[in-house]
Structure formats: C-alpha cells, structure tokens
Length: 321
Image (tube, rainbow, N blue to C red; front, top):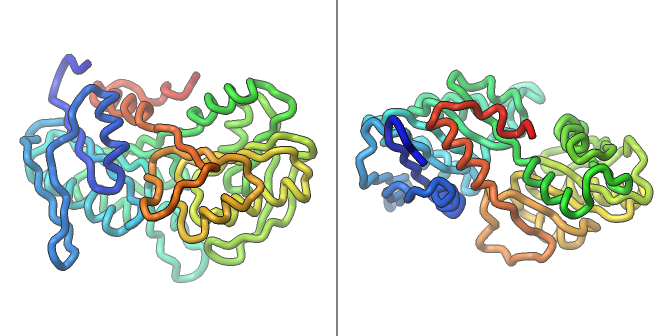
C-alpha cells in the first residue's frame, strides 16, 4: 500500500486499543510496539520499543474515561515520540474530551477545550485527526492542522438499508437546537424531512424538553446526536416526540457513547427501539451489555484518513459522495 517516502507507524494508548488494532488491520500494518503503564503513585509511564526516527507517527487515543489519565497518556506519548525524532506526529483522537467546554457560558468559566488544544500542540503534535467535534469551532483553537471526520455517513448507510432513501414515513430529529446543522445535513442525504426538539437546560447533564418544531405524528423518527453521556437529553427527546409528537417508532444514533452514570438503565427503559453508536469510545467494561445498543466500526474511516495524510492527498472529498 505504501509506495514512497517515510515509514508509517501507528501506536495506541490504553483508552481504545481495539479501535487502534482495527485501524492497523485496515492499513495492513502491525501496531507499534510500546507499553503504557503506571508508576506506584499513578503517574503515567511510557516505553517505546521500536525506532521512530523520521517516521510518520500516528497515536490513536480517545480522551475518554478515565479522561485525565487518557489525556496524560496522549501527551506523554507525543513527547516521547518527539524526543525520539519522529518525522511527524499526528494525534488521532476519535473522541475529543473537554469539547463541551468550548466557551464561557457564564462568568469565570474556563474554556477547557482551548487549554487541551494548547497542551496537545505543545506536547509535540504536528496535526490532529478527530471525529465529530462537539463544536466545529474547536478546530480554530489549534494552531496546527485539524481534520474533523464525519461519522454520520456510517449511520447513513445503515438507515438507507433499513428504510431506503427518500422514505416519506421517516424523519430525522435533532434532539436540540445545537445539533440542527448536523441533523439537517443527515436528513438531506437520507432524502427525508427533519424536526427539532427545543429544550431548556437547567444544569449540566439535565434538560427539560419544551417544544417540538415540526410534525412527527405517525413517523419513524431517527434521533441524531454527537454524544450520549448520561442519556438524559436523548431519552427526554425520545419521550417528547413519542408522547407529545405522536411518533410511531424511534431510533437513535450518536458518534460517541460516553454512557456515564444512569445512561444504560435510561436507554433500556426508554421508548427508543435501538441506539447505534460508533466505537470511538469502548463500551464500559464494568457494565452489562444491553440489547438496545450496537456499534459500527469507525476504523475504515480513520484508516482511510491516515492513509491520505501519509500520502499527502486530500481528505475533504472523503465524504462528498
């Protein structure tokens, strides 16, 4: 596959090694040989067991739970690669944590997404590859190139197989006003109409549904979101379009399944028929599997993007068709 230039090397931290292994399989290479452990006091220890001098290095690490440990692993791995004279370092962050703190919502709030962007660049990243940032403007927080991949086309293929394209009985629903642009683009590609759930958020991870913009009565609804954390917003939106809007069936999909706290019981007890997630975050090991949730692999998309970065060809046209 690789016919020119420097060698390519893909390393992974502890946050999502299964995804990194799948990406390497798509690229027909073996994962880089390294070990990420902890000292007795909890400090991160990184050991790299192969030369990276002059190589095009990609470090796959979602900054998911435990968020701060995952972030420190990424930073220290990049520092190790930089000091080992890697030719170029790309931070592959399938799920970019702290992205929800992207502005000052009230006085004396931090802008944590900008702080994390500064840390990543300072640690040695030459570019960042991520998927479905919570807020697209976070790309502007970096002073290095950022490629923000779209996971929605993976869901598009799934729902086209289920319902076809242009099905008048199907509607895409945005669970909040902030996701409207994402839902509109998805609805256009699926050839269906869309609706919006208007809500007021009282505090973090809690929301109150207020109104439904658009008629969903008797429709099969697809809720599209980027993150499912405690699932309060998603399940609240599903309840509203079912009980208030009169929807017939409700399916949901999201790029990042954080699945914190009461998320799984909420999803299991909700009126959502099925929730489709990408594997940017692994399923919580300590929690039992539930039938309503399934995953689609994002590895082919990341592998193609990595190949294009390595070969220095455009990523922009990956999603045009």
